[in-house]
Length: 120
Image 1 (spheres, one colour):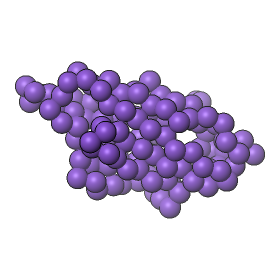
Image 2 (cartoon, one colour):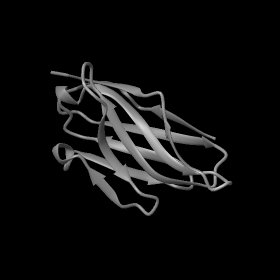
Image 3 (cartoon, helix red, strand yellow):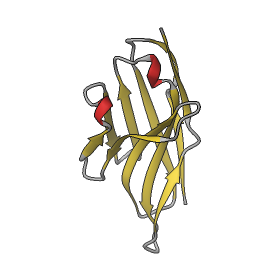
């Protein structure tokens, strides 16, 4: 199965930048779509950005121009570059991936999350 491990979160001042990483490990045939979600206190988990295996990307409308998702298939990692951070970006950021097993199963996996805190 697939394990996802996020890193790169932390405390940053408003206007600053952070780069999150998510490493996939385990046995699987391929990683398909990968995405970043976030969940702020008292709010539902929301999609931040998604990237396909071919590199096509989609973003939440409010984040376009500030966040960039990318992936390195050889390293089996996905990244989220976050610029011009705002206090409202404070949340736990989760990595999500769809993977195909050697048996052909197509399943979704989640990391444990990494905390991003943006202060004024």
